[in-house]
Image 1 (cartoon, helix red, strand yellow):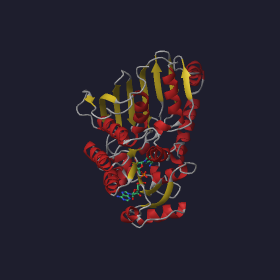
Image 2 (cartoon, rainbow, N blue to C red):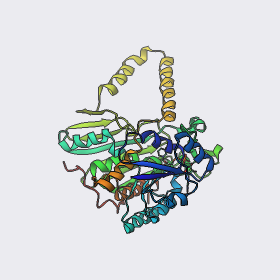
Image 3 (cartoon, helix red, strand yellow):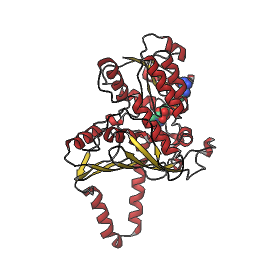
Image 4 (cartoon, protein in one colour):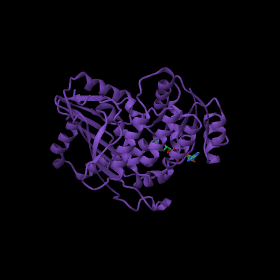
Length: 386
Ligand SMILES: NC(=O)c1ccc[n+]([C@@H]2O[C@H](COP(=O)([O-])OP(=O)(O)OC[C@H]3O[C@@H](n4cnc5c(N)ncnc54)[C@H](O)[C@@H]3O)[C@@H](O)[C@H]2O)c1
């Protein structure tokens, strides 16, 4: 399947790094409305630069548009692509409101086109391994998921110096104005829905704890930097999901079953190990805790202070240097669904549902009240009743 990229910013470089090795997709070129970004990106990757969006859509060889623009441009760009008869794979969120997301899904449906959205990390090796483990029934019935999507106190880091490999600055405005929930909650919601089926009810709290963040780059209306939600799935599984750019980096997912606990340490890492244990308290968690407890009263305070600084220091290059997320896997999956009839693991139903749950977390209808989700009826049920 031939595709073109719209939006040549920070994440587009990550897609380019993960394209090699994927079968069945061919990149024809890219376009960005910022001419200097378009030039830098296409020169760096040695690919064709389309001079305009019209030029992309006038190229009859382009079958799919991959929308890597900023979240607030997603609706407009995806709609244009769909209206011109192209399948669309969009970065997340699918759109900024449910009205827009519904309109995109309707536009795709009306033309018999496929529409899907990142994140695609439910396709990762480790989430698929977790799915098989739960399906095998060895751990018994899943009861509870604890999902973290904390990205550290980003506003205290030197984010203005972060650059992608072709030189795009990290889009701090989006992180602060669109908000960490809209930007990141999907990385936990997609795996949870793949494992447990659609979410029926969301009870959420959100707040902006650092309202002054990003003032130095002109942010005047920051979104919540913390959201905590309880997600109830059809089959009875309950998940607690926390998103923040306040708490120290933690992107773990823990699934507690009647007969054991499955833990994956980082949902952004496609090949992270899946840990299974009877209690979830593995040696890795227990040993440092035990040592600190036993030794702390004999050790000078300085030593523990030093250890903390070293750990914090190690986080910075991880944030800058990226992670092992296979961004392009979703494009290849969508192409395989269209051309080879592969099972629908990415779809507009999934994208709509992830968007609805995300919006419920970001802007709870009213504090403490559960919101009933209307999307996701057609998604597979998951193994909640295993
Ligand atoms: N930055 C990250 O680490 C990261 C990681 C994963 C996903 N994402 C997602 O990827 C998407 C893009 O983020 P980014 O970090 O690359 O942002 P970015 O600002 O670096 O890049 C977006 C690019 O899209 C271009 N653009 C915006 N509207 C356009 C339009 N109408 N037509 C043509 N070009 C347009 C901008 O000029 C910009 O170059 C977002 O949805 C974001 O949530 C970002």
